[in-house]
Image (cartoon, rainbow, N blue to C red; front, side, top):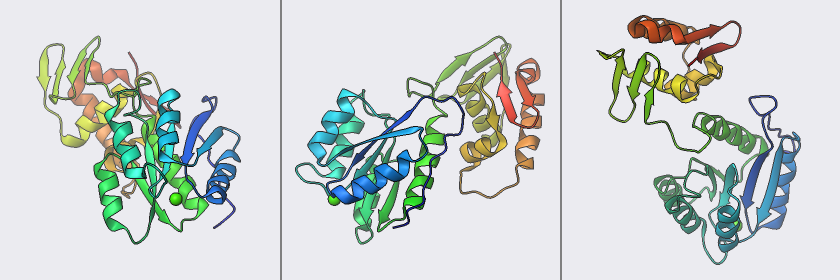
Length: 244
Ligand code: CA
C-alpha cells in the first residue's frame, strides 16, 4: 500500500468531515484512518464489525462510510441494506471495500445502494480519490440529504421529478443536458459551482469533454429561460451560480 494520500475538501471553511471506517482487520483500518486524517479536515472513526457499524451510523450518521464486505457478525452487504432502509441513514454515502475475486459482491453492493467500491488490495491514494469524488457528489444535494424535487422561485417553477420547467407560467423545453444543468444549479442555488464540478455532475466525472462545453450549454440554457436565465450568474474565474 502507498503511504501518500491526502483529502482536500473542495471548499475552504467547510466543517470537519466525519468518516466511519468499518473493517475488522485492525491494521488496514488504522492505515485508512491515518491517511485520510492527514489533511486535518477529516475525522475518522473505526469499528470492527457490522453490528457496531449499524449502531454507530444510526446513533450519529457520518458524512461517509467506508465499508468492508467481509465482516464478522453482520456482513457488509447486510450493513448496507439495513442502512439504506432506514430514513436516518439512507443518504449516507457508502464506499465498499471488496476482494477482487468477488464480482458478485460488487454488483450486489451497487444494487444495494453503495456509491462506489474499491477492490482489495487497493492503494490509499486510490481510496482517497474515491472519497473525494463521493464527497463532491454528496455536496450537490441539499443539507438534509434529499434532492430538491420541486423549486418555485421568482420566475422559475421547476418540477425535477416530472421534468416540467415553467418560466412565468410558460412551459420551457430543455434538452437532457440543459435540464440536468439547471437541476444542479438550482439544487446548489446561491453557491458557486465550478465548471469542473458541473462537468462531473452533468456529464459524469469520468467523461472527458472540454470545460468550454459547459459555457455553451449555460449560454443556451440562459436564453431559453428568459428572466430566470438572468439568475444564472457567471462568477469570473470560478464558475456559475444560480441566485434567488
Ligand atoms: Ca474484513
